[in-house]
Length: 403
Image 1 (cartoon, rainbow, N blue to C red):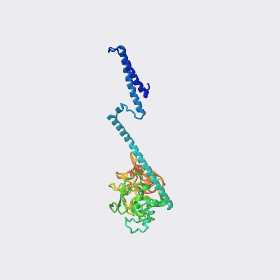
Image 2: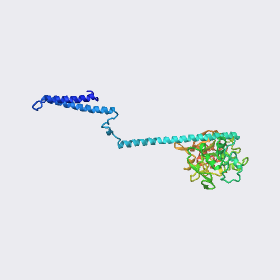
Image 3: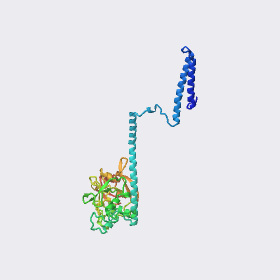
Image 4: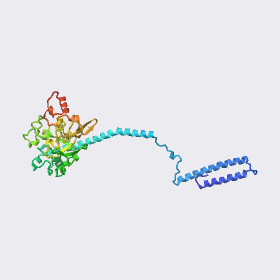
């Protein structure tokens, strides 16, 4: 008998009829069941059961053949996860997340640091190009790139005057001249709009996600086209942009007038006077001005005093005058915005064009932040800087910048 074929089913029914006829013939006339009749009845029963099973199998094969699978009777009894197993899975996932998150966050901060170094390196190289074109003079001084505002038709202009198409937005502005002349950017003629452009792109640290409000004469808030914007990311050092005395200085704004600190007598804001270009800082993470309440703002006065929004005294000056490089939180984070392990630091670009990361502790050492030969009384340093000076000059009351 061939299962699944029509001949098989007919053969099964045929044998059923045969067994029935055989049983009828074997039945004795008296109605009793003989031994032969009993054996035939058992064989007939087994034959019909086998035929019924074959019919079921035949129908199953036929259904599978036409694409209608018969579901397994135990398919709905597949075991599920228990509550304990689910809790174990959740615990393992949580553990993996807690392990991986710090690594991912560290990689993110490292990427910010690398990009910040690239931005500052680009700025330092643009500054080198400016110096090469301008006989060695540094950009960002009231006596160099800022002189165009002091010498221009703005002598009687108000502090918040906006219609100044010249590149710098302030006499201390280094970014505008570099953007316009070395980077060939198209800048708005309005000073307020131009200020907003000079805190984006290459002038923006990727780790700087702070906002700053315009400041003028004790008032903080939007004034004209000066709006709340990204906090200034990078500052130059005011002391590198000044003359030591009024003798030879083109303007009073460019004279370094901090009592007790003396720039080298022959210092000028020129690349050949700064000291070692590979060891002296041109620009660094920092934003002037940050007040004691921890709210950053920016001076919009085109004659901004003491560095305006673009220059600062650096990380070594006394706490009373720190405006970018605070030694306390939360203001510290505005400059020391690059965490590395358990410490934070900043990125600085040097006069030779390279940029590098520096921890906060290392940044407090005075030499990279001052022109070579500057004489400083110990009282002109904050506690961290004074401690490092005394470590190399025990008992000193003054210190001379050595590089």
